[in-house]
Image (cartoon, rainbow, N blue to C red):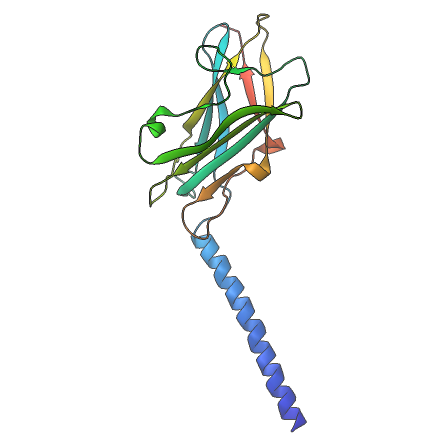
Length: 204
């Protein structure tokens, strides 16, 4: 009798363990089916407008045509730059006037598909911070196989006309690109060394 009871308990425990394994396996399969791989990217593209001003475009894509292309629901970003050296970062509007925000892509602003609930530039602990978030309101989400501009900001240049390079740290805890499909997953592939670079050249 004791032998049969032990056998029954062993069978029940084996069934529970197998069930847990199958649940986890099913969750993993659903996660893969819904995406979740870090295929989205962000970058900064810089254009010198004149001798005193450069425009920096915040670019993103959600995958590639030949690989995984995800539909997203939102993008959030925090960029940080230490204002403690010789190369302080002065961000302005397109007229060179100091500003406390960046400028979303007009095509997105003029559509009914996007909202921008977070948009501010501020200094904290001697570091310049850019906080920005964009939310896609459509039921299907948004995808971009090539880099597209989500927003821009402007950089006031010095008078010495030397080549400039700024490294802006991407704050991981506040930066993400989230999928539309469930389970909602962050698919942002964080840049190498965790920073994005602004480069300005004065060469013709």
